[in-house]
Image (cartoon, rainbow, N blue to C red; front, top):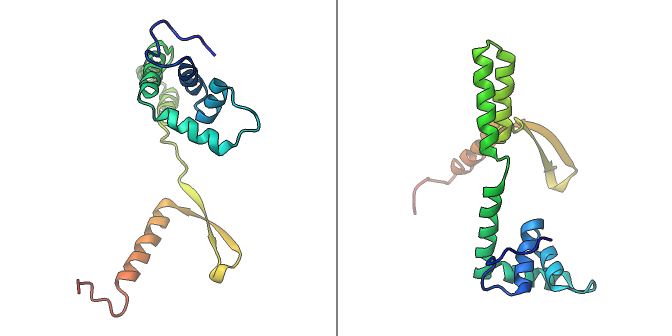
Length: 166
């Protein structure tokens, strides 16, 4: 764990500052609490979770975590924005050099950077009739949406349903 900077964590106790730093480092509130407060190994996890959550709700700790995130963003050497800029530069250069494969590669890099390369099919598991064995089938998102719409339509067109308010 790193030592806090001078003036950092203003108004926090040393243990609260240690908690904030450990949480920032691990992203795990329970682990940060265990590190900062020297919790015994036989302590109940539920108690640790409650204490850690209460610390995360503390306004001064919340501010300290925001400060740490801002510092990290300023000190970050390679960010998503920088990656995007480099991929765009590579794409533009590939086009100017008439290298379509390299341009496509740069575009694919941008797609992956923003998580737009999600699978087109999902695997849905459903139980059989009357709680029978689970059946698996692969369906496209379009098929899944169409099934839901058909189910909603079937419910609204049920006999005795006038469709209006009573």
